[in-house]
Image 1: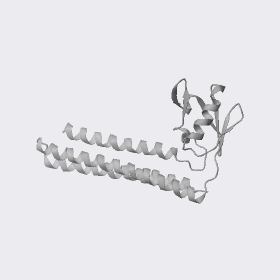
Image 2: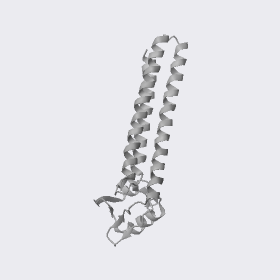
Image 3: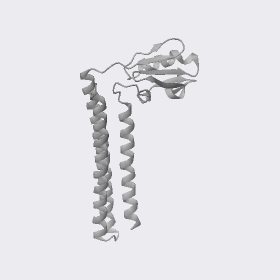
Image 4: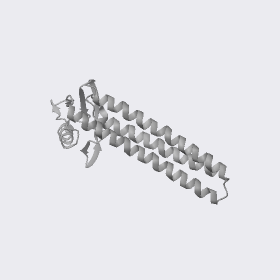
Length: 186
């Protein structure tokens, strides 16, 4: 019996992990508002290593359309500026010698549609991961029948795996719908 519980628990952990990953991916999609998470993938050369921007500077949002980057060492200003220009952020930094400002431009209708499409793809990837987790759990449960697990207990566990699947798919849809609304709101 514990075997069934461990299979279901492992499956649900994978599903929860897919939701967390989707949440992080959706946060990185720029929706016209200043969000420090859009800079998560920017790496700055620091003492010979590529370091995340958040590891060498503080990132603040003084208003809804501006990101303010204050490096901990003034010598890093040029490196940070260069790293942002070379990244896929798509915003030109303004360096005043003290801080770097990123003005978040308003999104065009075409760009909004592209971002919504990207968010939909991320949501679909999460759904695939959740479905794979359910499939793996059901396969493991069917194998457990050969190990002497009662058939009705195995069927109940399959139903539980399906209910977990449905619950997590619904969460993916909710996250996607919220992000799409955020992107498409002018």
